[in-house]
Image (tube, rainbow, N blue to C red; front, side, top):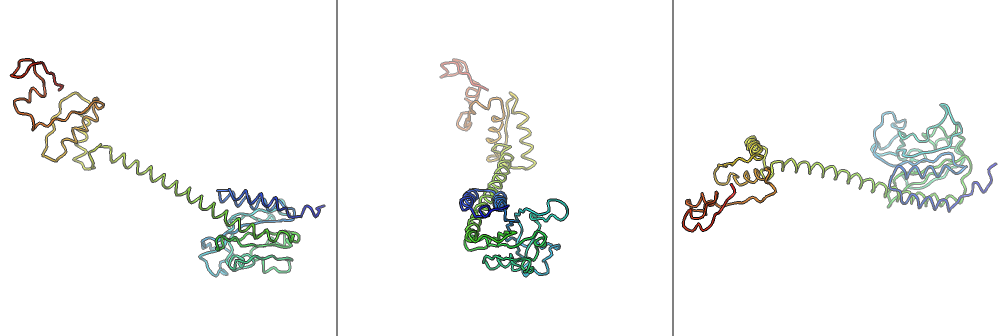
Length: 310
């Protein structure tokens, strides 16, 4: 037999739960911790958390015709209970996440619309208050308490608990404390999940942009995607690995230097310096000597042998 001490509200246990949910970063785990801890009390039959979200205009919603504003409604996001029947078709769904409730309809809808908590006893005598909860009579529910979940003045939803016995008076102020802490914890979890979502999005965008940069720089300093440029690149790829001498022709400003750099960058000598020579500054008579070297005495002033790499 259940003793009075079994039904006594334990503030220490409640405080530990509040500390636990305050550090939870997952909204789903947070909600499950709350409902899971609440139904551990022997007098609690079911606990549910409903949050206000966009109306999904579900045509199968039994309250659709009564919904005053189909753009917003209560969505069941977490629920857990201890049914009387343990198996069979009579077992109620306390966690049917497809369940919806219009704002302002029934006890819970009114709590969400007004932001005022409510406790009801003798539910079998007030069936209208429990619109949408057909299992109340079947599960021998005696009373319920619905408290709005509020954060910074905004009603986020409702937490509602069903009991098969009278609610202990000492638990009433804790309902408000719990709801306020849950509101802050939900806001924090949502913010963390949004940060994680944005972080993942930025990582995907960064990966995409890096791939774009790699593709754009596939031609080195030669930027473009035209057919003519692709032909030049194919010619560079053809001669760069060889030891052949390459003559690059073109008008001033057409990018002969860039082509030469790309040939060097793709050659086996890419780790050696690329020597640039201003041909206009070399007299015609000295071209052969400057580029191919000379022996001592080949001309006036050739006092020693000079070898130039080709």
